[in-house]
Length: 423
View 1: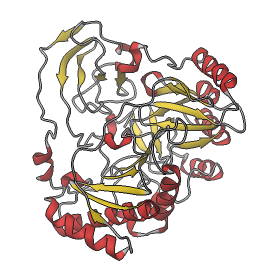
View 2 (view 1 turned 135 degrees about the vertical axis):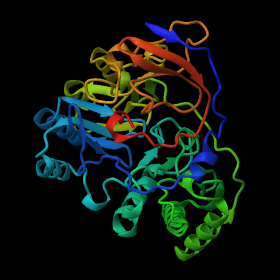
View 3 (view 1 turned 180 degrees about the horizontal axis):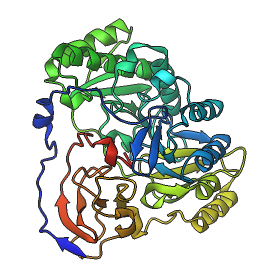
């Protein structure tokens, strides 16, 4: 039963930023990681960061085996392109670390929660975009892991590495790299923008993160994200200083709106790749293994709870793989109404939830709402909700939901980890 509320527009496009800037954090963030598990109602929750978004076929198989051995036999993909393992036992920490390390997925135990990065998943596959942003992401990840001070970043701080098409630039990164024509890159942090040479982009992104930590420390507010800093004035001086200290030549650039492009459309990508979406962002290990049955496959995890399988030998194999993934239960066609549906964990995994939202979630048939993204939430934290305009389906009890239309706003990323299923 849906207890529908009239559509409203409760938030401006920069919704809540003034409120965010007044916040004082008196604790470190509790965001789960691969080694710091969160205790949920259905067992331990581990979150694995994938800075480049890329998995090899061997890593896909290793994660599926790990979930079967230690977890609940399922894998979740989050709105930051991370992977969740649930149902883990309390005493699995050492085994989990060994398995992840053996698969090449844990280069630094000290830095594993701060390796938060989203990268344009179609970069280099469809003829769009500028620059090798996969190389940028690899270099930036190596720089993060090589510095002791970067462990001071919160588990919520996000780098967005965009090849110029504007897909991940629209996801609200704290530091955004945007590839531009002519071997240049735009570095954005808060309302500030600097233009640098493409080769300096990873170093410039790290310098911007250092500037954030400098200002946050001086402000004494314990800020987790750039939107929580008191003002851009102090940040501007810190960015200039940190870029100069890193030896990066940077020119001021207009800090207007970043490009905002649509996510990958399910189906064929060029002649040698396919794009699919996991319904409600969660798959069985059997479905996960179906992504990469061949040794040469490359799987890119997207921040839209999907996957891009690249490196296929030609169109015939791409079409065959797409059909196999559809048979496995993935969404492979752009017209599916389920592409607009997301949900938090809900019961039984989250003790805060008022309903089993994943069982209740479905596309909306109401003509005024049809086609809009709808996010089904078990409580008022609304964990994992989309950005932009979306329909808020909030549980008010078992089987009843209140519907509200919400307009574009900045996500302050302040959901309590107890409810974080698809963050």
